Amino acid sequence: MALVKTWYDIDAAAEKFGIKEATLKFWASEGLVRSEREEGDIVRVHIDDVRLQVADMIKEAESKS
Image (cartoon, rainbow, N blue to C red; front, side, top):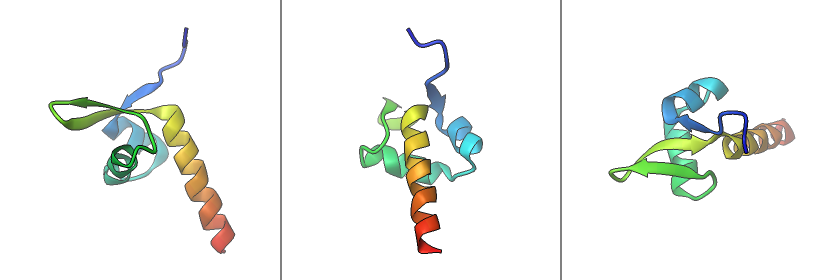
């Protein structure tokens, strides 16, 4: 049983990591992060998946510099 919050609303997840909501929605639509939908709209994302994507994004940016 998880004792920490794992599902975040799109706006809260974007704010937590300082990224755009559009980026989160793109990752979710591509299947890179798990998401929950309501009436066809992505409303929540799994924060552990977001962390992995952010880490990959940082790693990629560092390798380019």
